[in-house]
Length: 389
View 1 (cartoon, rainbow, N blue to C red):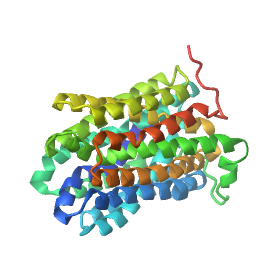
View 2 (view 1 turned 90 degrees about the vertical axis):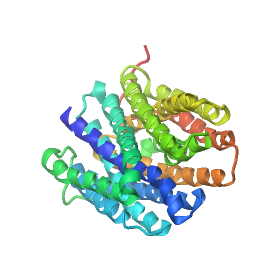
View 3 (view 1 turned 90 degrees about the horizontal axis):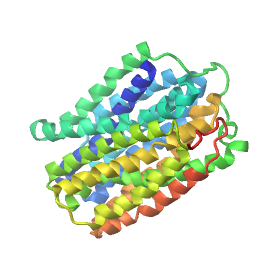
View 4 (view 1 turned 180 degrees about the vertical axis):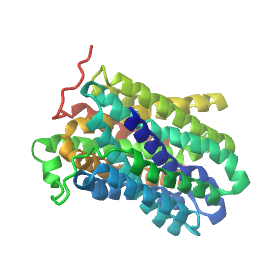
């Protein structure tokens, strides 16, 4: 339980480092006089870095140990977050965000592999899934802090604060986290075809389809939720609150769906919530609502979208044995960053073209449908899925 709690907090740090750019984006647009489409490269650069972490660094955890790779990743995140506070242009900030993202992608894969390794079999879906609830909690706390801090100290100091938080956890992980991986010093890392080929090829391809489609919708929302709330009629400060409320919904949805995954078929839960999210998208984009309606809908969107998509993590953990689990998960969510990279770009382009809000949201219903269908068809190799009562 203590290890799972530490992994949960590490995911909070990931959420903080990813979403802080969303909260400071209105200030950056004003300061640097850039459009949403121009600024979207900053969001996508971080997501490209996550792909590098998942595809490049995370597989090394199966050779050198997951604890060591988490320490390396946190160090990268802390240094790059501090450097980002000195950025003077969109290009500089985007390049630094690649490094931040590399660390985040590595941590995400490693903590999922650790949770799957240490959790009892009957609690594995919950242990892997509930970790993802830390991500929106970190983002939510950062949103409330940003509302207070931005007018007082400015966006650069907000970024310095996130760097300090990341740095604090480097010694904590080194001193507290046990080495749970089957590290094999001196031995070659597992070959990619051993992890995702052979009998696991079909499940891997379906996982990749699920992560690409899900990430496309998820990172469109998380990158632009503040701007989307403004487009829905809220002033900037209340739009930041709507973003924080969305992330609270993501926390509630992730915990609830992870609990449900201990009793029900995790694939059906994942698919059902993602299909439901498409309806919530169309409601948010097409129905004029007062402040309370926008906030409630943002909360529900968080519940269904992240509550559903975060179930892909336990599905992925079931698909791979422990000796190649970090590699399999890292590649699944590294490949998925194709969607995470293109989602904010596509959303930023649509907003810059002044599309009606319902059209912007409708654009992302197809990726949701693809993700839900792919998740439903995955047949995990390692363990039987919980029977549906």
